[in-house]
Length: 262
Ligand SMILES: C[S@@+](CC[C@H](N)C(=O)[O-])C[C@H]1O[C@@H](n2cnc3c(N)ncnc32)[C@H](O)[C@@H]1O
Image (cartoon, rainbow, N blue to C red; front, side, top):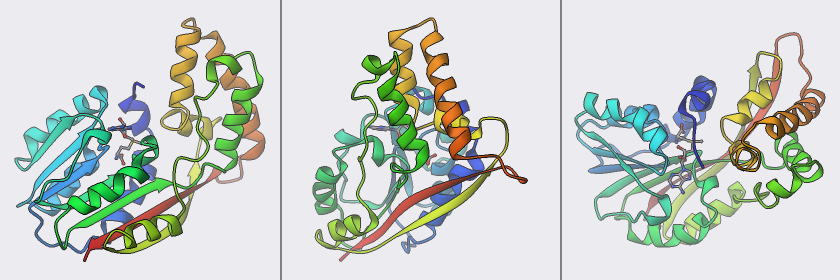
């Protein structure tokens, strides 16, 4: 699936807040190596290179488009580099003292099976910090799946949008504690105040809707199926998230885990 760095960056302030809330809970002072799994275009990874200037910081992502945007940052920060590849193929090294993964593991359905192996390979005292969306049951995502199932696009979108790729906070707490990590897990719902005519559609176009947009593009390269799908979905979103006097409130629930190896 192709990513569009410019579209993802459209809400960069709103999207980056959970990252900062996540990494603020990491207590490591002088890590040797820091890994950011699913680093995207690298702007947030660069904040890790600034925070730990004596660490080697590596961002890993499977999107060539995202890493193309990240490349200039590796020139600016001597301790920062990026690697193209799937998270599924990554394995920790004995000097990975911090692993961060923000808004990425929901794209890796096997992550709950991979985590025990990753955690076992990490060194004593290392930190793992992850954040995933907790909004798969929210109207934005439930309506996306409902609309996908019911129009002329249904065959093209069959099986494309998954309903439940993440655990809840208690599930991650149990997983980390069962794998020799002392864990803290919590949820936060950010009330994003969005502007514009179809702001929730604009928001999900950058992330959760991407698999559907990619499949529709393959099914009908002319774009008319995509336009019809988006118009139907947009009408439902306007009803679910009506514009108020200050903008459209989009509740954005996220699930966080920060854990330290015993
Ligand atoms: C929503 S973006 C988050 C980017 C960044 N972590 C941030 O917080 O801004 C998700 C990123 O995960 C990457 N990604 C998705 N599946 C992946 C996989 N299996 N392996 C590596 N990267 C993946 C995408 O390419 C994308 O850059």
